[in-house]
Image 1 (cartoon, rainbow, N blue to C red):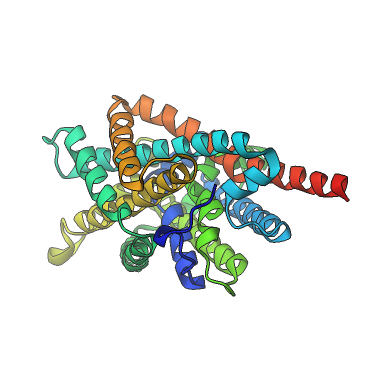
Image 2 (cartoon, rainbow, N blue to C red):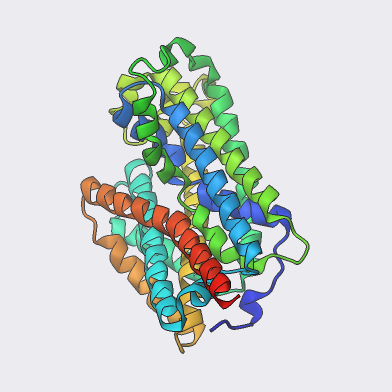
Length: 367
């Protein structure tokens, strides 16, 4: 079922793998995670849930890496074929590809909403989504190494800009707004870890890009480093946003991180500039996450369908656009994100475990 072409060359280094993981992980969560956690918890303890979620994702990542190594597998499609057979594997590959297409659409919709809200108020949302899809198709058309270079170039810029803005916002921080810790006990905090896990959506890309790793790389260290870095970034964002604006205000804001930049703007130079800087930077970051998800979908479909990759890419682009223009309200977008959250947990956690268990049982039976 696997194809060996220029699109599946093993060229990914440790640093590039970490950059791909971080690019896939960091996205919408930077802008709306403080609101999501504040609304669900109604306290300032969201940073604890985020920390637990990051730890859980790291442990799941390590198990998946262990399972791949134990059974000498480098891609989820090969693993599923070994566990469930050819036809079941093809069906599951198709389902996972649909998931990545919906993920691309969701990221594109979130990006278009942000752009419409802050930059292009009069521009129809479908025009913004169409531009995102066209640019993403252009990037995915080229080999995987091109996508890696795009991520490797833009990720440091995004992180530097984000940390710079958070640093300027430190003057607004009031740590007393983060107290008391766990006033309602630890059960609500643990119960909301699943909400924090949505911010780590994108970690499932590891199931595919392991196949591109250069021989001799150490993906476990690189992956854990990437997840840990993003966990720290999310905890910092939540802590600074909530301690600056307060839980009550954050709950009323759709994009609280952007609202923080507006509150932090001061002086003649920064007046009106931090807001634009963050929005512009995160527009590019949204673009890279759309590219990664679209690539994953096309890559899986290319494995199972006897259709040229260029035609597959065109069909996927149309589907991403159609799915992207269907949600008409913030409620619809939220419902899609909920579905995506459950699908993410199933693909990233349940599916690799079932593959590992099935292959292990088959080996014991044959022995």
